[in-house]
Image 1: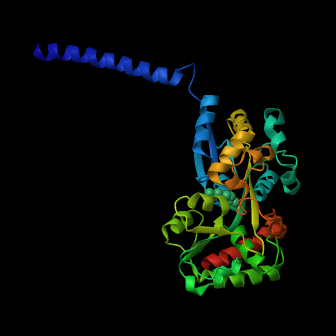
Image 2: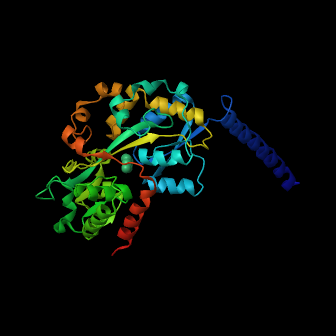
Image 3: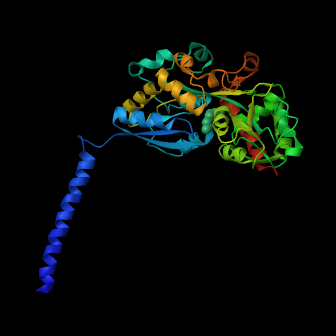
Length: 356
Ligand code: SPD
């Protein structure tokens, strides 16, 4: 009896708790009608101002889920290996070109993108997808070299800095085939898109020399490594470094006098996206001039949005690492999709990575 008497109230309590719990779950799921849709974005790290994501989530009553990649090739390999579920990607233009040729990205619905009118026509003139048929420029990266001013003496504004044996073990270069081979090609006075076997062989020889001085090939840890003083000089993406400078004001950045790699990372919607309409809405949101300016002022990469330029702070407008000087820009190039010649780069890269 005692047991029964005591068990009855407990059963009722459990039932009541269950009912309340189920009601709470249903309310959370059904809430104002239905569960919030989720937009899945696969992008580079530190590449969008978090407040802007929250604003978009509020405006669209949705959730944005971010996943990050470290290089175009890593992103592409993951997708080719069968990764699905992404609604928006930000590969560099040469990779977009390759993916488009393989039918991996959608044609964009321009009716959903009225803010396309703000894109800088000067940029579009040098873009691969000039009509924004399947990609929209998101952010421009200028590749360069960053170092600690108080720790590195006799700096010359050249790729030849990677030959400095006195900095052995304290320098990094990108774990990125096109960027790193491109740096060596530029140092030698060649195009970053060279398909000449002789020029690529010279670049390989130079990289084998430089590799002796490197701590590692890396695309992510270099930021914290430079800020902390573990590394003294690094191959760097402009915006990453201006973010790092907030942590360590001794950090300096230059674009080598031989010219550099200019990349534009584009917004593209994969063919298998499940939230294509929401992805268009996010692209259009990012292209609003005030949003683009706020994003650039936060991550220090330049959104090629002409109507955002007057809204940028002077710190950005006057920064030669963000708006390149015409003389350096003239010597710099965008990475092109070089088609089957890509295998030449893969061979150089594989030998370089395997060498001791
Ligand atoms: N935080 C990384 C940002 C990446 C910027 N663009 C990379 C371009 C590679 N060619």
